[in-house]
Length: 206
Image 1 (cartoon, one colour):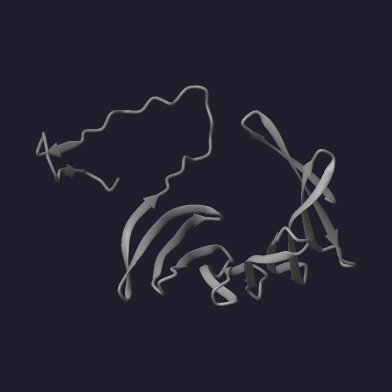
Image 2 (spheres, rainbow, N blue to C red; image 1 turned 135 degrees about the horizontal axis):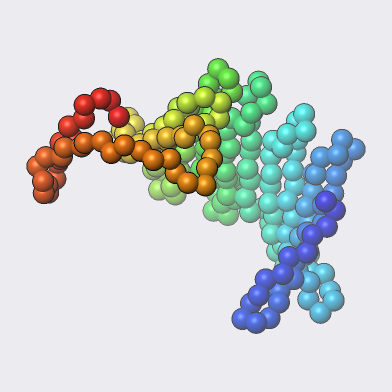
C-alpha cells in the first residue's frame, strides 16, 4: 500500500483525506503522512512514525500539524513481544504539554499458555489524578482455538475479584436442514414461581 484516500460525509459535503505510506529497505512501513484535500490542494494534517524489530512494529508516534509548517507530538504506542513473536504488551502514551513529556494512559498485557494460545489479558487505565483502573480477562479452551470459558475480573484496592463468566458450548459439527428429533427430558424446578433463587433437580450432570 502506497496511498489511500478516505472520504467523510460532513453535513452533505465530502471531506477528503489522503495517507501516503513510505517503506524502508526491509519493506517495513516506517512513515504514514496524512493530508487534507481541499480545492485540489494537499494540506498536511499529521504523520505517524513507526519503528520495527524483526518486521514487527515496536513503536508508533503520531504527530499533528501545528498550523505553521511543523508537527506536534500527540500519542505514542510501544509494543513488546514474547520469545515466540506473540504480542505481549501494548503501552499507550499521550504527550503532556504541562510536563513536556509522555504520560502513560493505558497498558494491555497478554499471557499465553504452553501451546501459545492467549489465556489472560490485563488492562490498566492510568488516570490524570494518579489513580489506576484495572480489569483482567482469563480464557480456557476446549481444544484447538475453541474457547471453553471466559472469566472477567475487576480490581479493588489490592486484588482481583471475579465479576462474571461466559461459557461456550459446541455442537458435534454436523449440519442438517432439519433438527433431529429429541426425546423430551423431565426437569423439575422449585419453587415455582420464584423471585430470587430456584432449584433445578437434574438426574444426571447437564
